[in-house]
Length: 118
Image 1: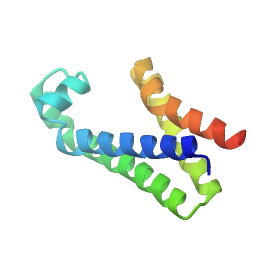
Image 2 (image 1 turned 90 degrees about the vertical axis):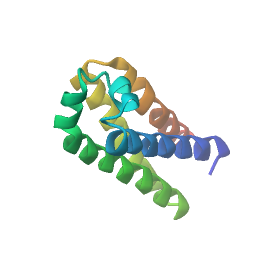
Image 3 (image 1 turned 135 degrees about the horizontal axis):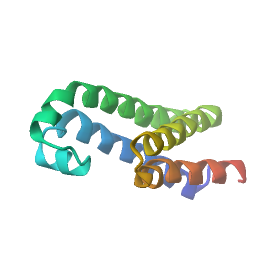
Image 4 (image 1 turned 120 degrees about the vertical axis):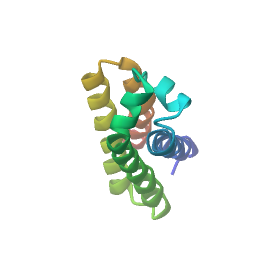
């Protein structure tokens, strides 16, 4: 597999481990509150279980990508990249924050396009 594709896959996985950390462990901390633009500490406390659940799913995406890469399964790599793309598109649409698309979906789209045209 092309080195650029490998770097992008690892970048996407690393991003999702970072999302896991923010959502599971930092949601109610100043960093989490600022990152997600939460309206208050009390709101963060009220929603921390939902955020942790979302963080866990981001961890599954990261692990899935790494596992697929290490077993050299192109179909699984494409599947997990597709999941990341859909998650980013849905997140950007549902929150009306286009930055989410650029941060989450775009690197996965680039990796998938490179795989398709490699």
